Image 1 (cartoon, one colour):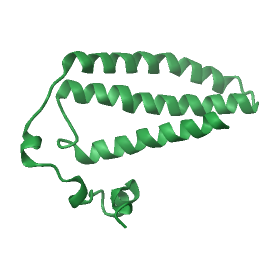
Image 2 (tube, one colour; image 1 turned 60 degrees about the vertical axis):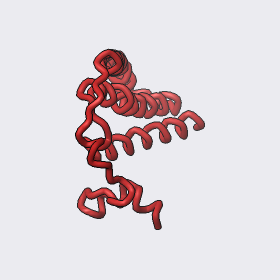
Image 3 (cartoon, helix red, strand yellow; image 1 turned 60 degrees about the horizontal axis):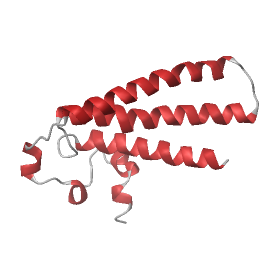
Length: 129
């Protein structure tokens, strides 16, 4: 039962409350912020640039109206990659610039991390196809 309490399903079915025994942070970590402006700027800039390069590719794939399975898989992979880039680069860059960690925004970090993990795992499955 402990694994269910660590899932996004648990958070959704319990009014977006995380299981306190698993996700409780010490009080001293809630007060500290470790800002990393250079690393944050790098993550944020690289994520924004790569997403900006991805968007025209996605638009072209959608507008071609080609129903070949390869194009459908490329569209799915592109959408999953944009989701992963948003979590892994943009969100991480903003958190580094603010000096925020899980203890500052536990629910937001948990949900964004769940989305990032799901998009990465879905991308892996789509690559196998």
